[in-house]
Image (cartoon, rainbow, N blue to C red; front, side, top):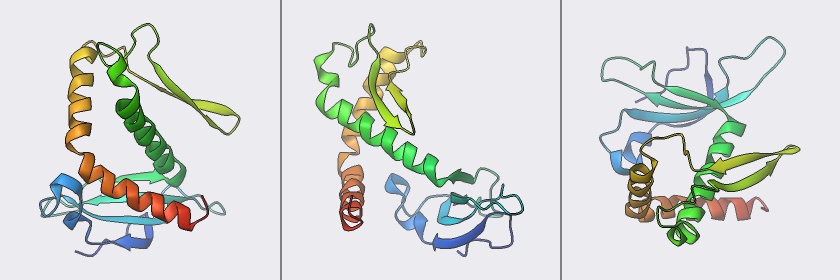
Length: 160
């Protein structure tokens, strides 16, 4: 299925077969494609690149398609990988997989400040939900590991 090019987001680089590789939703996904392109919020004279997940309902392109600035995509990757590292190396040390007295996992330095990575203690079901989260991470280890290995190879090729 071809990603539309007549909408405000202007695709430049596309993956039009994303539904075939969308993790556990592969072959049954409503996320039909991914694109990197010119952001829909661009103003005259100012150009931002965004990433977009294109969803299709079977009849039309969905309003639930998401568009994110590239730095936010990378920030999400940082949040995901730091969380995965926490559950792999630290969470088991605590009875409830976290320390209620110190829920901060890390402070990741970015642009003169730091992004706080922490367990959401405002969630009134956090003790149940964190166990489900940990279990889901564990069950998807192979699926996610394949993607992390590929990302690692590409980052090394780029010199990082």
